[in-house]
Length: 264
Image (cartoon, rainbow, N blue to C red):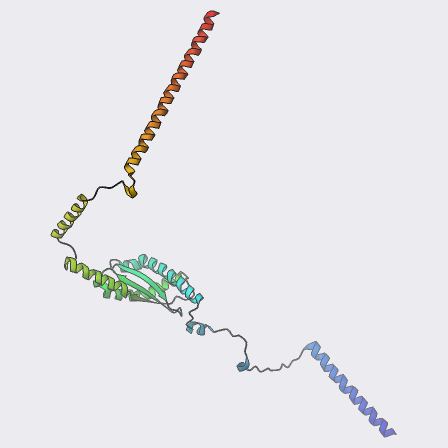
């Protein structure tokens, strides 16, 4: 009997000691927090949540959405205005004076890294020289645009000759040469013929008609003037008659007053 009792007492005491130790650990964790953190593993292949695109991927992706097209159109107009203003003033104007350079349009690439500046000149013989002058100016022009804070990073600028305007200017010069020769100006004989033709055209101009749509406007205006003149004359006669009546009434009043004074 004594052995059974001692074994039961030992098991009960060990159970109470273990439960109190566990409770103390839980209480300590609640009061002071856990010092050890569990490492969690996330499988990125199974992550189906939305991810933000990196800046490089945004720059490399050729997006042609409405927002991108709208922004490109705004930047084209903005760069066109500021580039023409800068090239017309300051040190750029002194370098480009006398070459007849005109900017037709500016086109920003979809990735916003490059911008093409299309130009043409009225002097076809200096196109090669103009191209050599414009290329070194691209870096200076980009620096000036960056000072204006038009966008975060100004794209690389490239001057490109506008072929459409070049072909038009070339055709006009060939037609002028075919009409007037290599000098590009008419001689005195052609000028005299031109003046004579213009003089003949001026002398042979037909008389302007007033019967448009079957109505004689000259006769209508003549009748209107006659009616206005008649009305003005009648108004003048009425004013003169009214003036005479007023004068006669004043004379009568004056004579009646004088007769009354003489009777007294």
